[in-house]
Length: 293
Image (cartoon, rainbow, N blue to C red; front, side, top):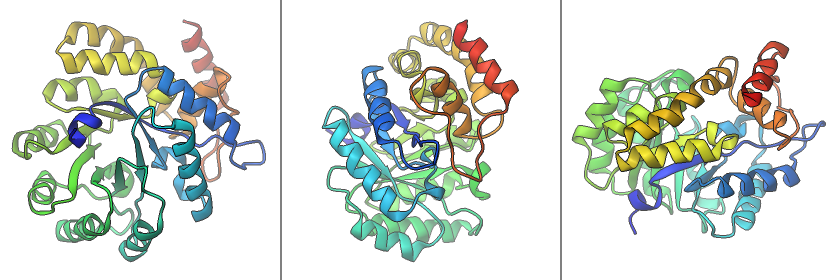
């Protein structure tokens, strides 16, 4: 089975639950893993930026990955996030990180440095050549400060053997359609924007790596499956019910938004690590209202 088939549908970028002292709450993490798999997601992504990876130590990341493999227990594929703006350090991490049970590696573009397109190409080329698993690009310019252009994405897809796909979160529909037009047949393109996933699948994307699916796995993954089948009317009906949730989720910060919803549902404690803080009281009240609706 190709990676395009394996990772078609909904992947969930798992949050990292914390206890009140901000240590990792592994009991809650197991509950979240079971909840999203029971809710119908096709795969999980551990150590994505939604997991607050900038605030996790190297040892914590390793332990979370091993715990996730153990608790997923082969029920769905696991993708591992390994990204950053120090290329040399990432090459060392790829060589030493436990990736034997991973389906792929997801790597966010370098942040802050704002490299040129050539710099981005060479960064990803180096990672792909070093990675023991297929590499998925992750373009999220709203957070990194630099867009990975459609031309650079297609160049990587065509010229670098181990670059297998992209999580595209530029929010630029014209750029998305250009990538979908020009990509190789076996190149996976998934959305990185929950609020745009429905129209982007209609344009030809193969699914989404989602934040919302942490808290709403059943309606969200059902929506994605309907859209992939071409039932746009059915998918729209489900997506319409989620739009207000998307707005609350990203109004202040990710993952404070989705953690607020999950705490309201009793899945986790409402704890994050600085510099992120929990949702303001007004937005938390909106979650209570939304979930009661």
